[in-house]
Image 1: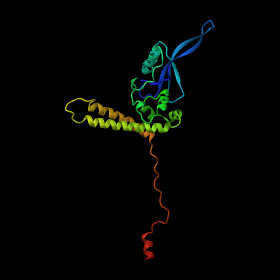
Image 2: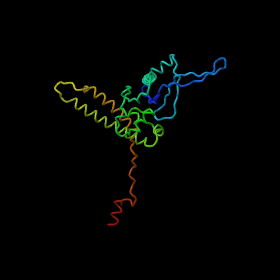
Image 3: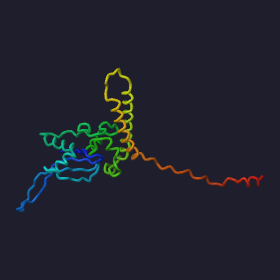
Length: 228
């Protein structure tokens, strides 16, 4: 199976995961060793090499994992059912992942796009919200990538503003798309996300207070009268 990592349904979680089959060796009560295939959930933060695993059994705990990682489980079942060949690397839109698909980002090259997907990044928001540790795992150019992602989301936000303005104009009663209320709600959500991201990646440099000029202190009124 391809190394495709998808986000969980847990609110505010940045982790991505995938279900895979692994060979597990065990010893029976007679001391004989056997190998069986088990399904596990591998999960990590995008770009990280630190992967945790959880055994996915056919029990209550396993059903909970499948529910929390529904997108990853759907992909696992799809790949298992495929009779030949490997499915293409999914886009965020294809699997219902909320956010701006990284395919729409014009600052990401084709080769880098495939590499980022294999690392678990599917949306521009994931790139813009990378921590410093994630940037180190991604490697050279990650900080620039994070900044460009945040700037790109600002452009997306501005385009959403234009759509709101266009939708608010008379159109002879013909419905041409989402309502103004829907667009305004989407815009408010985008603004909130962008504000957080921009604060994290575009920190203003500290401004030093102006230092006093060196030199003689201004003359007092008494000194001026004495010189006169």
